[in-house]
Every structure is written in structure tokens, then in C-alpha cells.
Length: 407
Image (cartoon, rainbow, N blue to C red; front, side, top):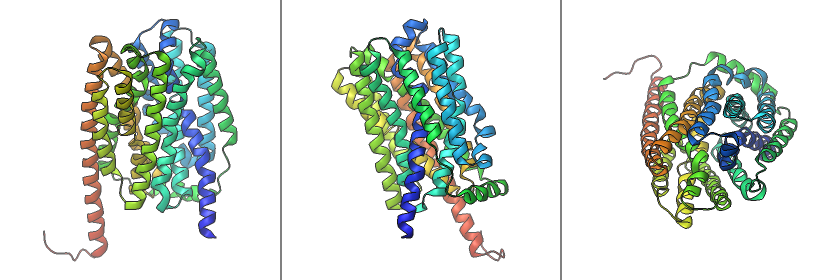
């Protein structure tokens, strides 16, 4: 009976967590998918698009540590509602007020606050409401909402935007985000949130592994954000039609969704810490990025599926690793680790846009493959430090009086 109640409780928090995660990522994904219409209408190039999308993640990075712990103070349901409502305002604002690069960039940058508030809130909800034995798979499900958002953005191209109605797509997405804000339930375990607040005030975080995790996330997220921003326009530049480009993005996003689920299931089954799997996915994904330098619809589809599936399937496993290794303060640890994610997501489109303008799409994808490989090294370094932490803690527990001898 208890197991049944746990499953019901997990589902009750997982559904809004999926929805909130999806709508907070709509603004950058829709901008990337609809870039072939937005750019000519508003009169700017791919480099300027990268800078605007960088502003979204840049503000997330700047505000992550300061307001990322908001969920600890007001509870995860209220923080999730605030995040979704802000996403709705962002998309309505872009649809109604974006008439130049400056107004577009300002509006989408303000939307970055949705990520800084929403991600720690969702992670805290899952950490408190879902049993530990299921958290790997649940985090995989939660982060499958991100490629699902990319998939919906890709499908919006052939379904709604081929006739030039990109503003209508943003309005529709804003309506969805507003509905999500209204649908977030009240906490089923308010006492757990209160305990989390007390715990996070007392616990000192071990920063060294978190720094390595943040650096790895910075490099990996720079690749992922560039991939979502420029995939469609890159394949269109290679001779694929815009409608087919949107479908390639959708197919790649489905692959990313599946990989996140499988990776989470694997972590639970193996009782793994997660970071080794993250490193493996990043290395495999770099191969897909290299393949994006080719031509032909079929090759580009397979390359995009590999790049998204492996090179962007790490996100759920990464967040699971943060929560697993810092269980007493998951929201604070998430805020620190995700600072790297947001910085990477901010600079990725900016740097990629400039590389494309100066060199080519092919040069950009090769550079992204290199960054993905370096990110894997940082994740393994974090894993090594966490292993050392566990060994030291075990030694102290075994010899609490300091009687251990030897070097």
C-alpha cells in the first residue's frame, strides 16, 4: 500500500515538473526553430540571434545563485508557478513587442529568470517527493521535457510557421505556459520543504566537485544550446527545406528524450552515481556533431539524432547526480551546478554564431565536438573528487575518535 501511495505521489509531482520544465525552455527553442522567419523580419543575422539567446541564459546564470534558492524559502509549488507565469509573459511580450533586435533581445533575456527559478524548484520537488530508488528514471523523465519542447518547436515550423505566422506560435506557447502555472498543485509534503529549508541553512556544500561539475556543464551546455539554436538553419543552409529541417529537429529531439529515459533507468538499475554515464554520452555525442559537417538529408538526420541523443542526453543524469551526491541541500547544490549550465548556454549561441559568420557551419560543429570531449573530462574529474569525499567520510565514520594510524 505504501508503495502504491509513493507511486501516486511521484506521478502527482512529476506531471507538473514535466510541464514546467517544458514551458521554461520554449522561448529559446522557438526562437531557434523559427529563426529563418524571425531574422529577415526583424533585420538581424545569426550572430545577433546567438547574442540574444545568450542573453536568456546569461541572466539565468547571473541570477541562479541569488534567486535559485527561492524554492527553499517559498516552497517548490509557488516557485514553479512563478517560473511558468514568467515564461508566459516572455512569450506574449515577444509576440506583441519584438520589432527589432534590441526589443527581441531584451524580452528574451528577461525570460532567463524563468530558468533560474524553475530548475531548482523542479529538482527540489523531485528530490523530496520521489523515492531515491526511482530518482534516476524520474529525473530522466523530467529532462525528457526539454527535448520534447525542442520537438514541439520543430513541429511548429511545418504545422504553423511556414506561412510566416511565427508570432502566433509564440502566442500559443504563452497560453500553454499560463495554463501550466495555474495547474501546478500545492505541495503534498509541506513539512519536507520546511525541513529542506532548515537543512540547507546548516549544510556546508563541498565546492570542489561542484566546481568541476559546473565547468563540465558549462562546456556541455554551450554545445547543447548552440545545437538547438542553429540546427535547423544549418541543415537549411546545406540544402534541406525549412519544413524538413523542422522535422529533423523533431526527430533528433525524440532521440534525446529516449536516451534520457534509458540513462535514468540505467542509473537506478546499477545504483550508479551518474557522472560516468554523463561523460560517456558526451564523448559519443561528439561523433554526431562531427557528422553534422556532412550533407544530405539522411546523413544530417542521423547526425542530429546522435548529437541530440548522446550529446544532449546527459542533462537528466547530470541533475540526478547533483541531487544524489548532495541530498541534504539539493536546491542549493543545483543552483551552483546549474550556474555552469546557464553560462554555457549563454555563451554557446554567441560563440557559435560568430564562428558561423566568420568561418562556416562546419567549423562550428567541429569546435562543438571538441568542447563536448573536454566536458567529459571535467565530469570524470568531478567523479574522482566525489569518490575521494566518500572515502574520507567512510574513514572518519569508521574511526570517529581519530585513532586511525598510518599515512
